[in-house]
Image 1: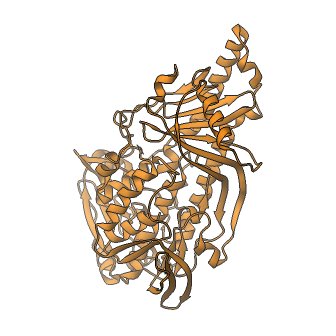
Image 2: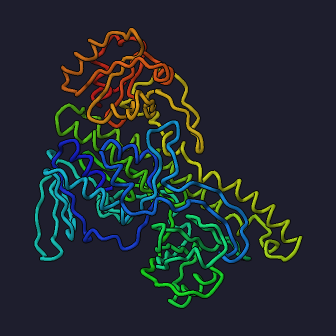
Length: 527
């Protein structure tokens, strides 16, 4: 999250310093799924091509498969195209991408380094900070030389992971389940693994034995690197090298040679911070919410945190953000964190369902009786798991209900769906995507400041809103759109869109008090 926030701030012209205790190398990629909303932000930043070219095999099939072993029974499969073949959904100009963390982080680092006012400092540890009226005084240590340095900053954002130093020093607790499972990830190298079994290649395999769901296998780069996960339960244990090797051989269903690159025990959690910060110190990403990776929500939720913070920090540093603007960060993002973490835990429970809800022993019987059991189970499990595979509503359908900087219009909140997503310009929602012409989406209009859309062939006046924004120093551009599909989706003649691409206000005519509107959306007024 730190790289994303540094890049977004740099893109906004804001000077910032990122300090990282490590050297920037990724020991074990914790994520490999870049969701559609994150790709929309990458489009804004101009790095979509870099993400696509980062190194994943874009011709590799993305099927999800549930088996007894790669050389055993196949119970079911959800088929997905390769990254190269997949097309964007109708609701977005972008599609999800497969880009593991050791590919994605360098893309973000290059993006951030491209701005002369952004500094990335590795092997440097934050050891303390003091918040005062005008900013934050932080103490950092260069881990190579031992040199201490005092850093004066206007704001500090802790994107420092689940064991966040910033969160702990603020005394912020976390609520939820501290242990869902003790899991062990093993990254190994084996070229041509697909030739060692009889299954059609896939991105993710879920292994189900007599004891239920016990492990998974993921194609990290679509070539020769694989992540094998012993899912575990709430019992903590350490596996020997021989146990790890035997488990991988069991999953494949035959003896074969492979190179273990890393072994990482970790704890799957369902936790959300009780608060997201103070007046000048904030937390984001894993520091604010810890989730099971089932669904691929963790990093993508964190990127949304960074984008929400980015424009608000810019506004306050440039003087047009109101006193309540940064306070809206927690009000907007914490409910989304709770929503996404909870959904991920539900996905985990569905994946592990064979441990407790199915007569799994019947799945391994030979002959017609076993065939019937496998067919019935495969159909049921496939239907159940689709909630994890089809999550467009999670990625695009989050909305900021009750935000203090959103001006409601009295319409009812839409249903918060997981698998489906209906675009709406309702205040608090992501402003809809429409192709205005080849290669140009309405989303391409948003990001730098507020945008007031005037819809239709005879757009209404906007002079009072423009004047009010100018009086308050709020960056505002006016864009006229006369496009049948856009007119339908945006549903009002005037729509005010925030820098993060969410609707702040809408109406068919200017409000009587345009200054009050501008003050509300910049965090200066309570409505």
